[in-house]
Length: 517
Image 1 (cartoon, rainbow, N blue to C red):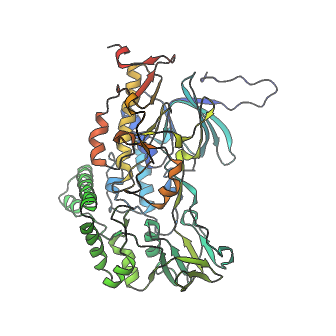
Image 2: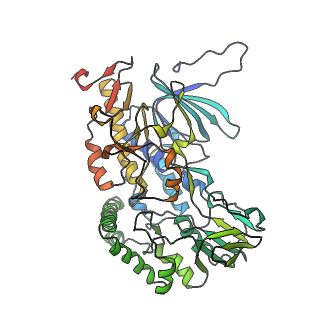
Image 3: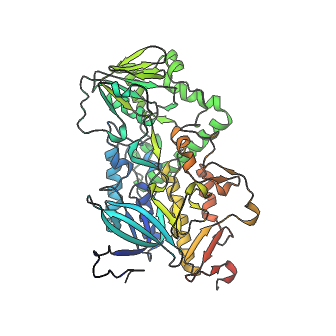
């Protein structure tokens, strides 16, 4: 019988069957697939399932369907360390989905994944030392129950089904179509239409060149400029190694390390000599556009890497601007009108379609109703340990990757290694439960928001910062964005440090001294 399986009363409807595994992974995007692979490699004796709310794998890459969807990180570092990337650095949605599908099939991960399983609630039971998850299955939302010893959250950090759209005056009067990229309709007609894309981040940088030539005209309307990297969508070292017939696994490993080093060096330059970094970025754009256009529309007021740098592979955005297929306007919206937009300057933009590429909404741990022994859990009142565990929350880890200079998946690797090591350590010492807690000398430590806004301040994080766990002044009590530091530190974390609180299956505290040799 599965843990705590209840016998239904004769008059009651049949209770949902409870299924138990050692580890439940939530999400079958790039993080969940990475976690599943590493569990098979590093924890082969653990039973596990991956629960995915959507109808297939891919997460972001399955959901987003707007024109030109592509990565804004290179696939040598955004891809898995265990599966070589054989294409160009910046990849299309379909190329990424194909790659993820191959990773699943090549490693027989599909048997572990349950699709159309949406987690509604998760409650930690201290007496039984397990998580109980209420799940809806399939299109009809059939109730299912799952229990697990360890819960691994890999569901990402924003709401797929709803993007962020500011509310401007007059939106209800506009006679055209308003669409957010996250909910791009399959039947939208762009031929002969005038399109305005509001925003200047990675999504707008993708949409504008993809729409250019497929509509009457497309205009990127930005409140303020963004930094762009318009480099060639080829990696010279990868091309050279392939010409030398170096095997793809070696190419992947070498180029991955080279890109990491280059990113680290540029980030350091952006911090130490921001004007030099700024000049490099703007000079790259000036190779496509007149200097006066660069000065007016592509010269941000903030330092490089205070917000994410948008990618323009092969300068496609700037080619569209140069060729007259697209325009850029830097202004603020005063109001929507029947025929388009009235701007703060008094100018107007006529449009048939207005795309609000204005960002997304933070989703903290999948918007799941979490509880500890029946008491609702507010994650904003917890403190994060290294951006993956939380004070007072037992047997749970969250993959929250890098979102600044380094690719998301580089942190997936590090967190996977740590979680697998922790699971194996718990088995070795006979622990049924682990959580993290401040050491006695840290209890008066100053607390801060999840991320330092002076260092990195994109709109989506600033809007949702109050929902995220807090961080502390000590570096281990924060979500680091420094891969070069974490790749050396995380593998050396002492799992017997007093920050970790273990108990045996009976609930008795375990310490390093009490564990038999």
